[in-house]
Length: 117
Image (tube, rainbow, N blue to C red; front, side, top):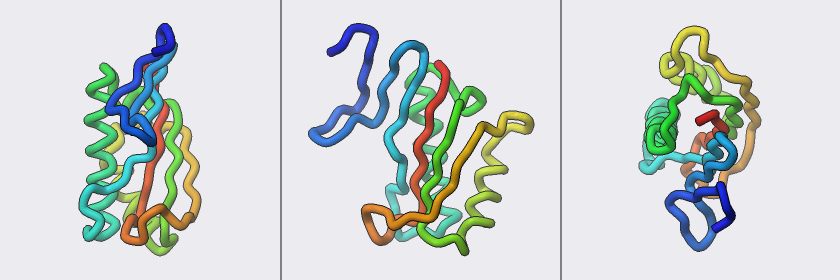
């Protein structure tokens, strides 16, 4: 382990989270139940982000940047609705959203978050 660097939920391929120099980096978060619609998948992803940020000792109010990968741009309005309901007013971080083919065909959204601890 590198000094000052902590990895969480380490697997053979990736870690779910790394903390270094007061910044937490999350791996791409996807829905555990990929059979859900975009609303359900987005809610699952945001819940996973909340859980990891809590484990890191921080929360969504301290998100520095979010990158969102969405399979179908027709899902964009509903994903945004769930996102906006999840955020506290005045705490919207910088964000990028791109259309992408995700690693599993049933995944509709994936989010990558960087936050301050």
